[in-house]
Amino acid sequence: MNILFIEPAFPPYQRNFARALRAAGAYVMVVSESPLASYDPELRSWIDWHWQVPSVTDEAALEWAVREAQAYTWVDRLEATIEAHVLPAARVRERRGIAGTSARAAWLCRDKPSMKQALREAGIPCAQSAAVSSAAEVHEFVGAVGLPIILKPRDGAGAAGTHRVGDLQDLEFAIRATGVADGQSVAIEEFIEGHEGFVDTLTIGGRIHHEFVSHYFPNVLEAMRTRWISPAIITTNKPDAPQYAEVRAMSQRVVQVLELDTSPTHMEWFFGPKGLKFSEIGARVPGVGQWDLLNEANDMDLYYEWAHALVHGPTSSRPSRRYAAGLLSLRPDRDGTIVDYEGLDEIAHRYGDLITARHFPPPGTPTQPVEAGFHANAWLRARHPDFDTLKDVLADIGRIVQVRAR
Image 1: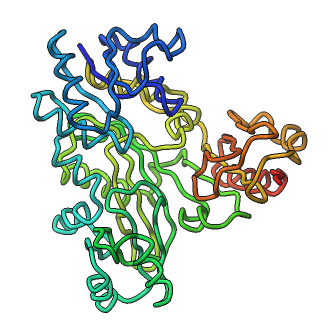
Image 2: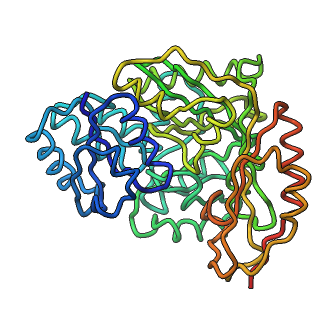
Image 3: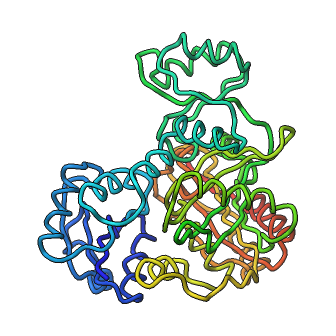
């Protein structure tokens, strides 16, 4: 099978999709913004055909590359795994008659107000939301729903560009900051109180084949706005427990409503005083190397599972569920340049056998803003057979390790 894959070199884990496609027996074709010569020898060895374009999110450029690929050989699939690439790929895919996620499904997974409207109509509980493009529309929504509310880009990922508005002064600032005052269309949502988590799946033929449930500690907005917090993502090794039955059933229903076929998905949810509420979905893999974390927790290779599903259909393998696993983000104490780390020897002595991966930028590295995400500065991954023990371990590491900057 000939698979055309978009952008294998960045972020670093993207190379695993090319590796897995080769391992599954695919003829691996690539569209990228980088020249083939810029790839390391190992990555080049997995690629059979390569085409460079100025931007893979430029639909005209992407379609031109796909035409070149189809002129060269038959293309069975056109695949993208990065949020910003999914919709352009889907639109080009449909125009070129290639199988895969539809443009409708990709649009609904990208445009937050349209997504929630479709899900509400199907009976899936979501926060009240709308698309607004003027201050008057914002005030009308607030008048009906009340404060607090959330303002964010219609096609945003994670907490990027997101504003939590708790009072009228904050509201006026957010209206200006999001561009609504200038006519920019953005998503406005009821703020949902509660714990935040997510479900990652590999969906094959419209059915969830692999499924993983994870938790944020604390919720994303708080984590991305508060420097002193060392936030964690922890995936449970007991997703079959009764407390997850409702969220798993909701996830399958979302996949059906949006008519997703064979695709990774990343679905976020809240659970609080108003019960379980669906937040949003991406028809893509999660960010910050989450599939690597899931592989470490479950003794498996999700990249290969994805590639095998495209080339041959589902495998018979199942996740081991041996470990809960977590990602811990460690923030510099100020913006500037990293000068030193404290506590690394202590955590190596206490928890070295639990740590599976770590990234500590060398002294002299410029810091990145707190809101840049879990991989912005220092981070580590760890695993343990017990979820609560792992949560305590990550909290302890967050207290011990200090990232000094000046």
